[in-house]
Length: 182
Image 1 (tube, rainbow, N blue to C red):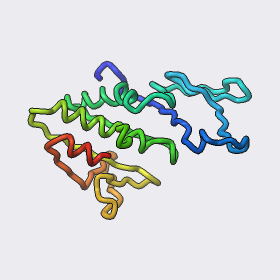
Image 2: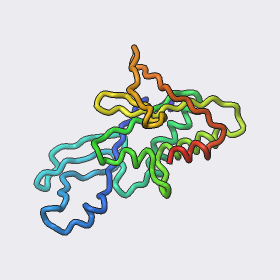
Image 3: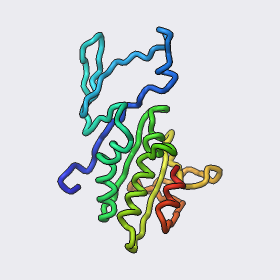
Image 4: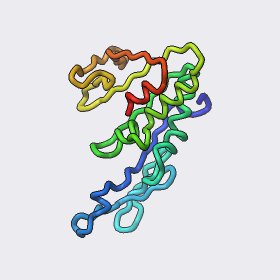
């Protein structure tokens, strides 16, 4: 990771949900005012591209979480096992697919379960201290998502933009952690 930029900005285009796909009423049709390629999203007005937004990578609606993980997150996971700090930051409006991308489902694991599986495979048979945080920032409030929901309280942001997570979990095997993520 030393040769690359420290920050990558990637976009994942959410596929249409079933309700949007099943729509037969003209008034219910979802108008599409953009098109995407591997590194840009283009705003389309009246058939013409009017604006272009460039990113390090744009993942289309047909690309899987596994593809996103392999291309973007796995190199970050590998570098963290080598001692570098790493952060994956999911941002977007409500229902844009953040939770699905990060957590996945029982039949399609998200970035977090895939990362934990790789981390534990990498450190297998080694003595290793692994520290992980899982936080949500919503309406300018930082919350520890590793804490039971009924115990959740806003976390304190300290000088230097440091947030100390109150929850520590130590795992000895990957399958225990992965099952908690799903």
